[in-house]
Length: 50
Length: 326
Image (cartoon, rainbow over all chains, first blue to last red; front, side, top):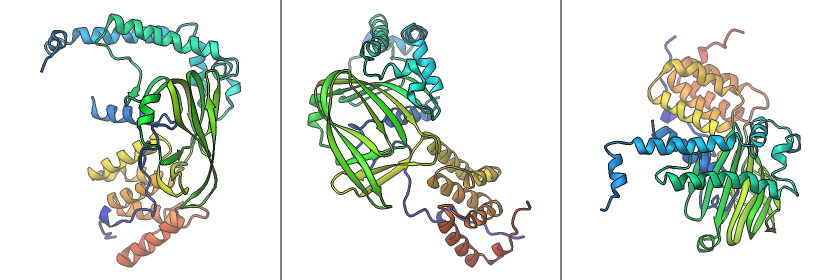
């Protein structure tokens, strides 16, 4: 069967997008009780260092 | 620019740096095995379940009403070991995950799976200079926070009825005093520290819930949903990996992507997996899409049906794709 090759950019996203773990829209999390910032920093560190 | 000779020497020979790190890591490992910490850390490793905290007596003792002395002993012995280590090896880094922005500082003393235990310090003067937070975030997790030192006030915000666009938010002020423990069910409660006298130091235990829930951020003024994010780092890691495999055109990853589409992850992750799968391998992607569209009770069934119909209209040959043999 000869199937088309579908371009990723033509495929729709869901109506509401989900950001990466730890992402926030504004300055909401710094005074909040959440460990996501440490996990996120370590995640970025670990993917950018050896 | 002035560079201290000790630092300049590290460019040619980083042995002192590595020795300093080894020394601090040794102190940390010694603390982990000490009488003050070993039983607690063993409990923490076992706590990555859905069982209640009371089932883990050593860990629970840090957050009980009479746990002040034990909590100070546990955290104090770590801080003393690290302070001694930095005194002797000032070029070392404290060998645990950490973060500071000058106002809030965190040392992650231990972690296992979805459980983390962190020492948190918040500077009152720095906090007062910051704009008040205008939003609040609810994440799928539980937390226990024991105040070790300092006083402050916080707002405990509760999320009531929820629609796709907003939530009913109610809040009440609570006073933070040494010896108190505040427990939050993060799916419906969030603690926002408002004011701190001096420096507020807390020990914070968090356990992320397994599952597909997302973290939702709402505007405090009117409860409007302004952002949502993955509820656990695993979803974001997988999504990043899928994007990379898609960028590399690794069609051999398509079956794995299809398994994620039909698995138990969050809607956002599964939909991104579907997009990548369709782009990598039309047959595997469309087969997964059709199975998703035919599912009863799946929240992605409706957008999957809409995409299936759109693709079938654009590419009529897709109508001939037969279902997977059972």
